[in-house]
Structure formats: structure tokens, C-alpha cells
Amino acid sequence: MERKINLEKANEIMKKHGNNPEKLIEVLSELNSEYGYLPKKVLKQVSKFFDLPLSRIYGTSSFYTMLVTEPLGENIIRFCENAPCHVVGAPEVLESLEKELGIKIGETTKDKKFTILTTSCIGICGVGPVMIINNDVYGNLKPEDIPRILANYK
Image (tube, rainbow, N blue to C red; front, side, top):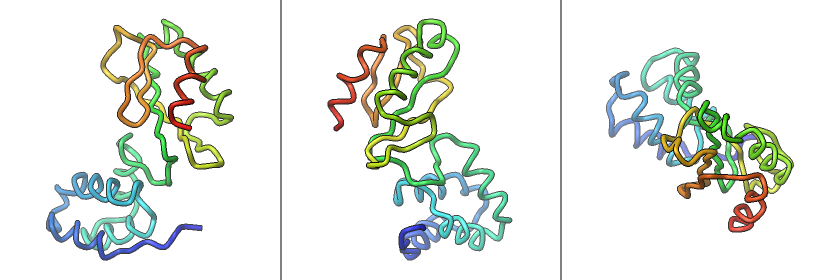
């Protein structure tokens, strides 16, 4: 069940940008920052405001990896799954991460502390495998590094 969402803030954000559909991504990004994700109720409001089909709003929201339509954990782990990281051991590090947290990619721990997401590239291939937790970057990862790193966020 979705928590109670205050639509007044959403309306303020949309009005600030005007109802120009070219501003859709900017509006969705700001709404995502405001709520921590894009609640269904807010997406319906965006659809009405821009007079666009809800399917287009959902499509845009789900296309961009920095926009999320489900609540995430307190700590967001973005794990690079690009080829350079893959060939230097990313699958083994990811396996260690999933085992340590007891969740798979796209899931959130029961205590809502962690969510694991993948990204196609973080842009620092020279220090792969790489992951970002919130705004902290970790490179040259090995499976045995994971428990120590996660301990900083527990």
C-alpha cells in the first residue's frame, strides 16, 4: 500500500516548470528528488497536468535509470554491469553483494536499508569493478571487500 502522498508539492513543481511537455523529464527528475521515487499518484497527476497518456509518463519514468517508480532503500547501491567491469570480476563481486544483503538486483532489503540497482557505466572503467553507494564511489572491488564496505552504512 502506497504511503500518503502530498500532491501540493507536486503541483508546485509542475506549475514552476509550466505545462510544456518538453519539460517532462525535468519535472519527473525534480519530483523524483522530492519524494525519493515517483509515486503512482504523482505520475497520474503529471499525466493530467501535461494532458499526456499515463502510459507515456510511465514509459519515460521507467526508461531513465535515475528515475524510479518504487520506493528505494536508505542506501542506493548502483553496480556497474558494463563489459570492462565484467571482465575484471564484477560478477563475483555482485554475487558477494547479493549474498551479504540477501537480495538480488532491483530489490530492497526488508529493513529498507539497501537497494541494489545496476547501471551500464559509471565512467571509471580503469578501476573496475565499480559501485556507487549513495554518492560514495568504490573501485577495484573484490568479493571480500563487500562486508567491510557495507558495514559503513549499517
